Length: 235
Image (cartoon, rainbow, N blue to C red):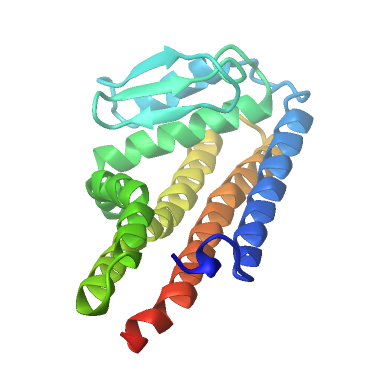
């Protein structure tokens, strides 16, 4: 097996991706903690704000659930549940209300069959499959020669590409959900103008984590191409 598989200069791409993700994660946590100290003037909790937004959008078949953790909030389109974490569900902060509204944005996307959300849901199984098996298939390919090796390596790279595609499709989904959230918070009078500015900062910092994940995935894909692209041509 080639030495570069165990160590090579392209590891710098992995390190860059990891650093970007760590910085983005630190940013969202710092921003969320800062604006968690700002109680919303409406006094509504994240759960109450979510219920009002969903009802105002004509959505009555989504269950709001309390889950454990911090910033583990999510909307599950499969069983139509809006899951709010400990840091969001009972909190009256502008940060918590903003996060809850963001998840409502996903529910509204689902209601209107927002194409990027539909596409992301469709490629989830392929992306998970690809990210899990890409490296094993590439490693197997290294034990072969000629066209068989090139074919397996290319299949591995292609499979990882689906994981990258998932990250890219996630970006418009998340940005659109935040846009819908801010609009709902304003039109429903849940937050005032100054509070909306704080909430926007929370949602922007959260969106940066998805940008960071996409960047890291692209760097990983670039590393695969650099490592194995030349081998395919040589073979």
